[in-house]
Image (cartoon, rainbow, N blue to C red; front, side, top):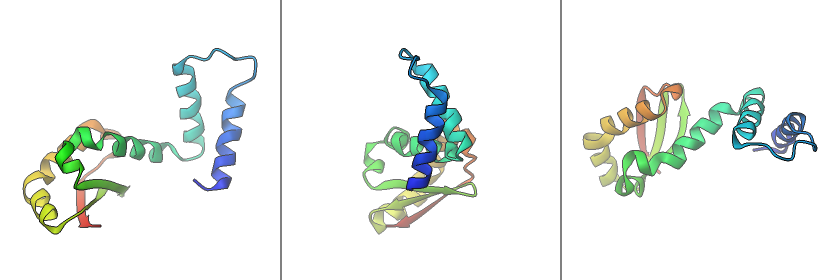
Length: 119
């Protein structure tokens, strides 16, 4: 995150919280962060970060150790694979299952395809 966005986020957060509000629930904090991220256009990036965090649960530890998500652009999840043999196996055997798991868990990302590449 660049410094301009970081400062804007801090201003948004400060606008949502006053010093008198010492006891905020986790739901209150989540609502404040959600509003700030939405106003700054970072909500989608937060969703993508959640996808990265949950990747091992979605694909399993073996696949997660060889393949990881990189970005989401125009409904396409871009992921990198560490070896050409794994790229071949994931493309032929696991791609459809990975795509379905991501679509079920993250419908708001509207993922339509999964592009894999060595990287």
